[in-house]
Image (cartoon, rainbow, N blue to C red; front, side):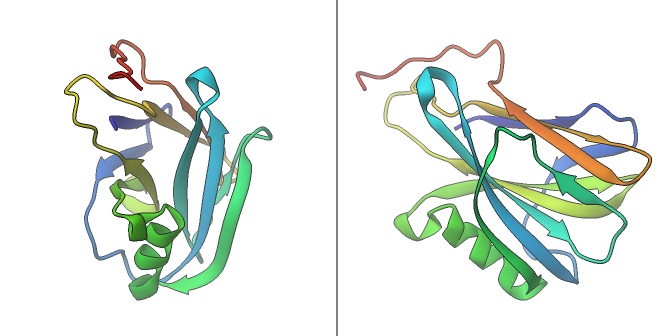
Length: 152
């Protein structure tokens, strides 16, 4: 899977991250959208509790699971399980920052296939924050990348 995340706001951006998460508690949300050819795309948003930001998904996104107030030392493991990590699925993790302050994380499955051009679930997530701290996001297919079913 190839994933790119970005922001449409000058003060909001993402960057690749690794464990551990920043201190605090997180609300964890697993979302599903319908991608190209009707295939579901899933991803997790970890929203840091106690900050002035609230993540608001588009109405068409299905919230599959959620957990509230999960301590940082448990949140990443629980999010990975939501994504199916227990079945060997790996994920890409990115910090979501507002003016260099972490406000949350995104986790997106990264599936590998034997065919070098076989890429599925091409996904880009854009974030926009308003003056009230509401972070709206949307996922969309990543443009300009050739898709090949690899015989699938």
